[in-house]
Length: 334
Image 1 (cartoon, rainbow, N blue to C red):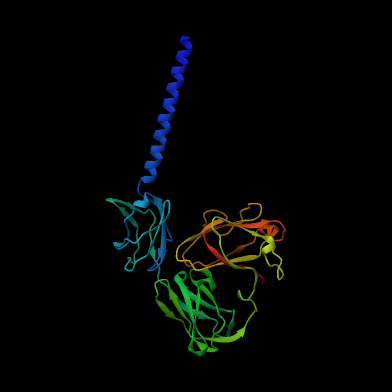
Image 2 (cartoon, rainbow, N blue to C red; image 1 turned 30 degrees about the vertical axis):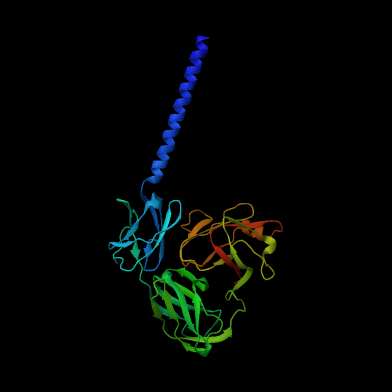
């Protein structure tokens, strides 16, 4: 009997100890989540008018974001647990620097530093031939990732606006813009606009109203899906919904996803029908999950073996996730 009582006392003590430890552990987690801390700032090269996303802890308390040059922004958008976004203000120091979050007497400084972009179109091509509809006006220069619109002269003195969804970005120093339908043939100066609203007039090129390639998505591309679908958490796109009449998907081909214009970073991820993870882009969160910067309205990468098998199947589906609206999927034909 005495042994039984001792056993019950020991068991009860152990249970109370575990409860106390669990309670302390939960409190520690809550305290950690409440500590004001900046973990990341994306992107790290910015300019006026650009949306940046800041991740960390305790950010729901943030009252202001202070940019290099002591420029403070109070209009903060809270987009989820540990995520806030703000629009880069005018007057950020050209030398760049860190970002500071302020919240009720507390402050936290980013480890990473911001640099300031300065778009500078320097050269345009081709100059030796006419540029047909669906062909590219090639622009070369510095920090061209901040260019968000292009203005072409149209018939009857109209201006045709091409947004970033019809740009092809190969690097920060090069930008290809597909010439749109309805342009006015002849010598023309295309005007670019960056995310701050500043405009740049390019050197003169010669435009043609002839159509090259015959594809709405640009020369050298076959469209396999068109519509407007917001992915939400997961979107199962059946292989049977793809139009493969003009091309058979093969591993190594370039696939292109086009999205609606977005003014804030958006997540995009892709799996094949077997939850495989095709490599999308260097620097992503993982092989198949990346964050598209504000204004980054299309994505190109190579088709994997798993994707090719899925797209050519009958009962499989591409599994697309994130929070972004897809308008077109194409495969490069040349």
